[in-house]
Image (cartoon, rainbow, N blue to C red; front, top):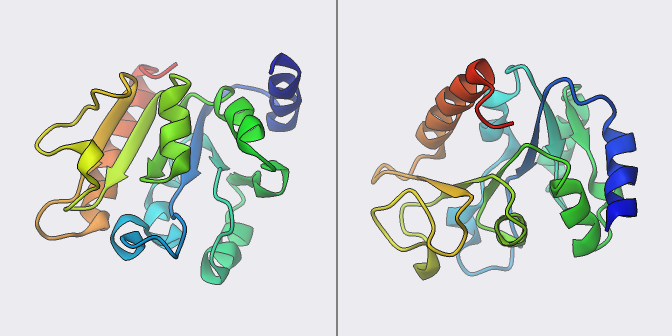
Length: 172
């Protein structure tokens, strides 16, 4: 694993900014995908913050790919994410992962990476209810939709917390 991590460190370059990995949608064939996934445009409200963003997204939808190509401050790592070992190596080089409920969330949680999970109003049962942490993954923080079922409000909270973390260097 160390060799893979070094390859990712080299690809990412200098570590002078907070490195934030992003995954915004899951398998479109998942029964609850329309509730758990979001569009990159919604997530883009944090892209002006002073961090290095890294896309962990596999198989992005066409409209998301187009926007990703326009985002100069987001590194698209998808072509190199050939398996979970590569994804784990990349995640281990990041300071934070922000993701919806996908395999990336579970992988990041399993390897102990600091992870912020964006959850729909009615999440999968394993995320329980009425809490902002996970008993399964101690390094994970849960950001839940309210009854408005709006990811915009969730991203507003994430943005605020990320601004605080950036100003306090609390994540590193």
